[in-house]
Length: 286
Image 1 (cartoon, rainbow, N blue to C red):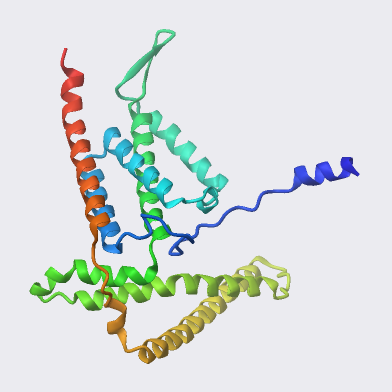
Image 2 (cartoon, rainbow, N blue to C red):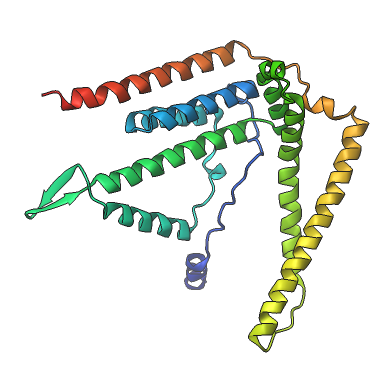
């Protein structure tokens, strides 16, 4: 019995973990309790920092900040999505292509100089992308969707002096964030139901292409119908709860922990700017 069960276990493939967004991780922590506006300000500040100083020091400090926040928030490893093989292949091809560009620094191997500049730039850009994605995922995993709209309305309050419709933008953002996970589930159900339908095998290429075109049209029509039905249901629910003004109204405001978080982010940004500015000078000084 053991000989037959071993191959079965070896041949079984692990189910890939899907990308889960806009769904907070259950539990409470200091990161979960932060005001949503504080998290948005941290993401904005870090994005600006990495835009103007995309160096290794800045990337490393931001990565340390994200890992520390994930540790405090108790983010499980199961929340991380599985990386598909085709993405690894694309990264490998991109790395090989970038490495062919050469550049400084150069190493000598058996009398042949090899430039590592292109490969290092590719690694830096890849690390930058991973850090930014992880930062956005942290906000998604520790923030309730209902808190984003009121936070945007509060942060954009100074823009009302310029007659910018901040509240309307906050309501539109809140509706989009709430509808996005719901529509994804609906589309997955539609796609699964479509695959279960019996299909006729086309005999010619023209018939094959026509069948694919008809399937696309049917899926689009069904998706639009489901979206309109969900929008009508959501509109009735919003009206019953007091209108769209409730979506952007929330008495939550920053607390002491939020100010501490902002101070830590500012200190980290200042340290990153200092290191990125002084390191090339110190590195070239004899």
